[in-house]
Amino acid sequence: MATPVFSLAAAAVALIFACAAYAGDPFAYFDWDVSYITAAPLGVEQQVIAINKQFPGPVVNITTNWNVVVNVLNSLDEPLLITWNGIQQRKNCWQDGVLGTNCPIPSGWNWTYQFQVKDQIGSFFYFPSVGFQRAAGGFGGITVNNRAVIAVPFGKPDGDITLFIGDWYNKNHTDLRKMLDDGKDLGMPDGVLMNGKGPYRYNATLVPDGIQYETINVEPGKTYRFRIHNVGISTSLNFRIQNHNMLLVETEGLYTVQQNYTTLDIHVGQSYSFLATMNQNASSDYYIVASARFVNESLWTRVTGVAVLHYSNSNGKASGPLPDPPNDFYDKYFSMNQARSIRMNVSTGAARPNPQGSYKYGSINVTQVYVLKNEPPAVINGTRRKTLNGISYSPPDTPLRLADLYNLKGIYTLDFPSSPLNRPPRIGRSVINGSYKGFVEIILQNNDTTVQSYHMDGYSFFVVGMDYGEWTESNRGTYNKWDAASRCTTQVFPGAWTAILIPLDNVGIWNLRAQNLDSWYLGQEVYMKVADPEGYNKTELTVPDNVLYCGFLKDKQKPQESHGKQSSSPSIATGRSKLLTLMLLFATAFAVVS
Image 1: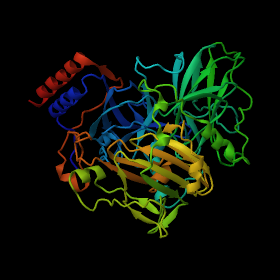
Image 2 (image 1 turned 45 degrees about the vertical axis):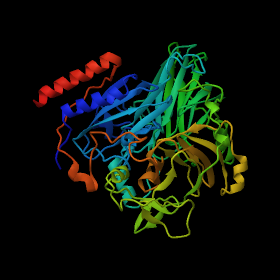
Image 3 (image 1 turned 90 degrees about the horizontal axis):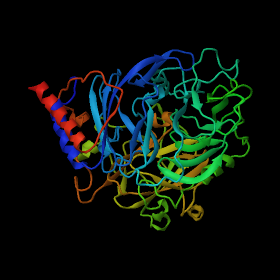
Image 4 (image 1 turned 45 degrees about the horizontal axis):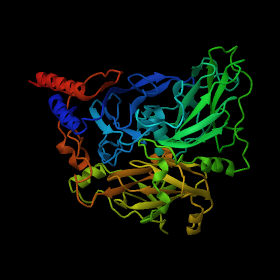
């Protein structure tokens, strides 16, 4: 296969014309080299995916409506895609970074993402979306700040802290992938990382000496905003800060009703932000803990992440037992009731000045209903797979959206069943046919024995209800039709259901997936096609000039050359300086190719 990168001159021209369309909004530029590094977060050396040699990767710190340009060099030895968890890619699924919309970036190749964070604020993250790579890292934060003209419903914090938590294995992601391919379960993780680091040595028996741990340095009396992301593989985690309350203010782009929590369950793929005031006496440092939930805690004690909260006037190191997790082994409703308590602040604005509650989702007529059932793994054609409604998705070599653009037939079928069918499970490429500007109700039914998280690209959805048992139409009477949380990832407890409502106002082909990485890898995903009835390029943005081709369209791909190593610092340009920067890029590119 030829080594690519589109011509610099063509890229510069494409960027200039693209920027003209967004001339009023700033651009932020990032250059990333995605490569392996050797690290030992839990004391065992292994292969980790880093961005510009950083693990975790850099935080993309931007503001509502900014345009983001990320030039990615794939220095891995396998294909790569980056997806932007929670960024809605309005009218622009071409930048979504999943196999239904994009050909992966081959090893040694370079590709540039360009998208706008239109009408969004909040805390999100990015990660590699193919080949089980998230189990090796490659993730980082996305912070979308409010515009200065939009009021924030709390005072400006004294600092902003991003914290990635997640279960972790000492095996490389390729070994974990092979285990799943061989029909094996991954078993208990080896630990929990916080910002890519192992636990503080709170227990000499459980934590070996020499482990590097995360320290959060704070000043007494100050208030900090913590942005917490569960970027792990499959483990729900309970998060807590010893002796400190956490005032929840936002989740995945929604300003919430402000409530204090002493512990908070954060499920795989979810993001929360809260305020914590440093109001303790600092007799010693304090523990920050993320421990496994919904497991036999006596057997899973090693699956605990511990960082240190260090006051500048601290009198000593943290010591003694960790703060207790919720004692609800026999009370299965504790976590569910906590999830139900997370509600929309209906009176405040977010990306726009109008109140979040001005959209009366509870009075809109539902136009489509889908009941998506998750069941325990099934053996299909001799392989262990995960399904939704008995279908285990297998991505074709040609992305669905490209297949549509070039009118390729037989790549997928537009017939995903609206409810589980009484038939043997099968592998397929069945897609949900969503109606543009419709209003869809999806019931996620989890008949497996573990918590599952589900995420939808392209949208936020209203989490209107959840309960244990099998969902029936009578459960609609319990829906929250006023101030339900609007987010992009929700948990579904074992033996329970969660109902979500989605206004289908974003054209494209969008991925609905299990965030639990093992379930996703084994086929638990589906795509929803939301087509504009007026036709291509009426509402949706056109296919980017640098689109990569693969599968049945591979002959369209032009050879490219590597751009080389990347810098770690983003650059931001607005107005005239932006255009001057692009003209300079064009002039340089022209000189190179002339």
